[in-house]
Length: 222
Image (cartoon, rainbow, N blue to C red; front, side, top):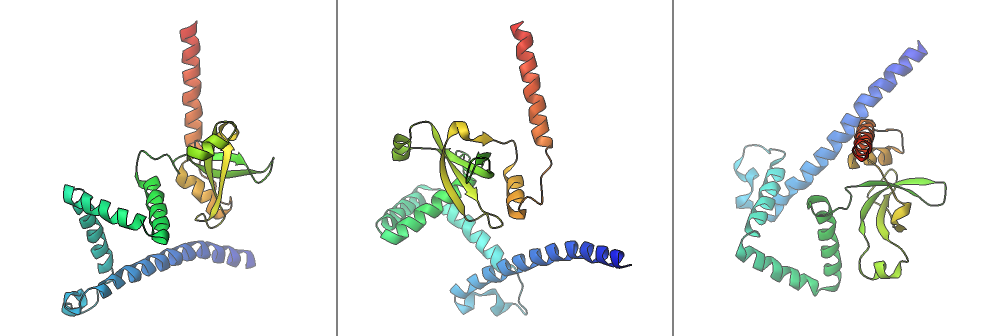
């Protein structure tokens, strides 16, 4: 009886806790975005004309605002205004650092020509024989490239369970082991501390494809 009760409790916990956390995070985001109406005059706020408050209007307002900004900055005049604003921020010491870092960070995720965070790798860290999962963020350029004795790459190692913090390391490319794992699967492993391990079907398919290529190459050489 005790074992059955414990099993029911754990099963219920696994259902309730993820739902609660998801609801809490989403409700927090909704409340935060709904607060954007505070910047508008009272006569322009939806709550002034609606008989009751509708949660989520801030999300719609923010989404439309971002789309509008994107639309305006794609034309000739918008690009000129954006360039002028960026040049102004580039002259402000603290603002320049925050703006440029944030912009480059977002470009890493959303622009297709950036390779950062698109390749999962395995490296020996913090010492030999201890392995860590990281993300290849690119090859070295500039002074870092000139100061290293061999071809090296930049790797970001997120921490568990908070992957937004971590370590930046420079390693020889030959010491970095690329993985077939998807980025989101790697994040699952990191956040859960290895308790959730993704399916390796993608890795198996990659090995099968590689073996077929090798076999075909051997047949052609014969």
